[in-house]
Image: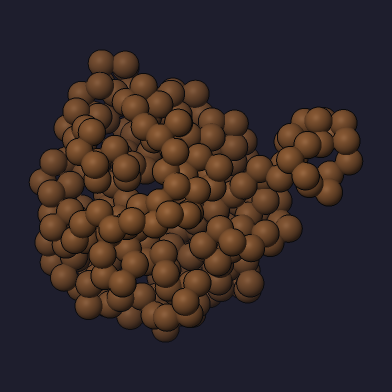
Amino acid sequence: MSVKRIIPCLDVDDGKVVKGIKFEGIKEVGDPVELAKKYCADGADELAFLDIGASVKSRATLIEVVKKTAKEVSVPFCVGGGIRSVEDASAVIEAGVSKVSVCSSALVRPQLLRELADAFGSKSVMLAIDAKKVADIDGSLGSNEPCGSLEPRWNAFSKGGKEDSGVDAIEWAVRAVELGAGEIMVNSIDADGTCEGYDIELTRRIASAVSVPVIASGGAGTLEQIAEVLLNTNADAALVASLLHFEKTTVTEIKKYLENKGINVRR
C-alpha cells in the first residue's frame, strides 16, 4: 500500500502567505518562513511554496524568501510561480528546493516541461493544473459544449485562474507527462478556499489518466474530506492550506485521523 502524503501549501504574494476563495478575495495570513517551520515540525511530508503573484504580475519568484524558507525545512520543498525557463528553475533549485512547479508558462510553451525534465530530471518537475469546470453533463455552465454532452469538461486556466486556455485539463495532464512532468498537482478553482471538499471527480479522472503521482488540491475543509479524496481517487497526496493556516487542525491530527480510516501515512 502506497504512503499518502500531506502537503501544506504556502500561497505567497509580496513575501506573505495569503489565502482567498476561488482565487479571489486574497487575505494575508502569515509569514512563510515561520509557517514552514511550524508545519515541518508538525510532520508535513512536503511543503509547497506557490508565489501566486509571479505569473500575474510578471515578476520573478521571491528568491530571498525561498532561501530563508528552504533553510528552515527538512522535507522536500516545491516552489512555483514565475518560472518560465530553465534559468528561472535553476535559480530556485540553487536556493534550496527539491522541485519546481509550472502552470501558466507551460500552457504558453509546453516544450518548457521537456526542457526542465532534461535539465533536472522528471522527478524535479511538477505541473500545476488550475482547472475549472466549463461544462456539465447537460452542457450547462455557459460553455461552448453542445447540450447533452455525455461528459463533464474541465479546462486548464492560466494567470492565476483568470484566463481560460481552452485546453482540456485531463488531456493536458496526459500530454504533460509525455513531455516530462514527473508529478501533477490538480487544483480545482471551483473548490479553492471554499472548505467544501476537493473536486473528487476531476481528481479521479486525472489520477486515472496518468502514471505519475497526483496531488489533490483545493477545497479541504474537514478531516473527512481529506480522507475522502485519498480513499476515492488514486491521488498520492493531499494539499492543505486553510485548515492549517486558520488553526482548525494540525498535520499531526490529520495523519492520526487518516490512519484511523485505514490510510497509510508516514508518522
